[in-house]
Image (cartoon, rainbow, N blue to C red):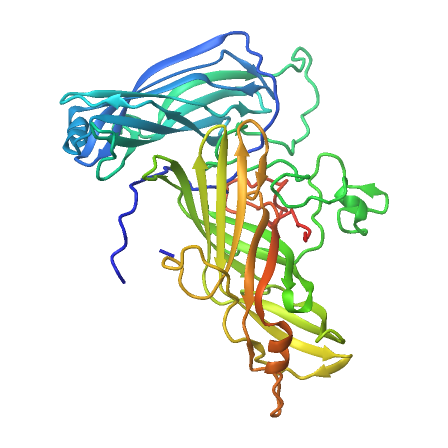
Length: 545
């Protein structure tokens, strides 16, 4: 993924902790009324060590915030009045003055761990500041303000919030308002040696409204969230929580059009019995789908099903892309400040098609009219011939966070058998496109070669559900593909290459792929709403034209 010397890249701030389990994962946006008996105010100064151009320096980070003094299970816990003040030492100021910086604008992103009863999730507190003057020497305090995602937990017990890694992006400017060279500085900060596990910010007691005077029967295990879950904000690394809203029209999981009760259309043995549907409180059995197992999962592993349609422009028709398994290994997310001052969260991942141990889709049939009159049926597979790269880019803006995800994969189209007017034609064992399918590539210098390009666009609306596509929750990806000429088709001296090439090959074929919600295979306690008991994706999407 990753000649001539490349142009300088923006400075990066690497996120700390486990990478998106998955995206990374988008937490549910649970509605709840904030009802607290009082306010718990936090104002604390914490020791950090930041990596500056001049080297590692001790830095004091002062955090202020207000929380409800206590909460009830199921209620929203929203931090308010959040500020982050980074007190830069004289050495950091010298780094700025060396750039001839007269002013500097700061943006911060603080990782906050929420723990309850041994379960953890991570949220991000983001802040921005107006430009401030850079002194000739001495320390400099930069104070940012911004939103912090709310938390919701359905379990009673103390909720402990702990400050973790801090990313600081600095955009210095000269006296005439021009950008310095470089245009930005990125600081990676971690808690000091005496607080390597983080520094507690607040402890919020979470109770329950249930009667406590008389003991009752043991509670029924819940299939809902049992760890604190961020209910708004960007998707961030999470150790135990990766839940997305149930699919529906306009949501991100790409299953719109499904019946209200997915079990209603299933035969016996697929999520229902002769006597009725699944028992309440248990995850539904997924619809029939090919196996999708990750043999040696890592903490970064996830899997998902895909399906969709691909137009064949020459035939004025469309072929269905069968339900196929994709295994994904997520990369480490990074923060990047672009020259225009915008901040992006970039996450590279790698994917692999998986069917019976091979990197391909299941075989599928396509029926069309060759030359407009001859009914032709072919059995096809798409074979992956190189790395599948998945690059997610979240533009951090308020109130919406905009996401673009590019999926790039080299695929050849192989023909297994062919019938014309019901008469079988022997295509032989090596009938395939002469090279991978190709798409217009927006960055050919970085991504050379022939490959399919699909783009998924999403929006994380502050305080509401995600819309469009995210790697963790799925959704639609679209692109355009050129089908190359065929080779190796036919036997006994009778070549079918020209027949298939004339019938199918050509540019301008629209592709719409739907990805289902991912199963986070590698997390310590996968969400059973998203995964089967044997850790396969539970959500099976339906193709959409």
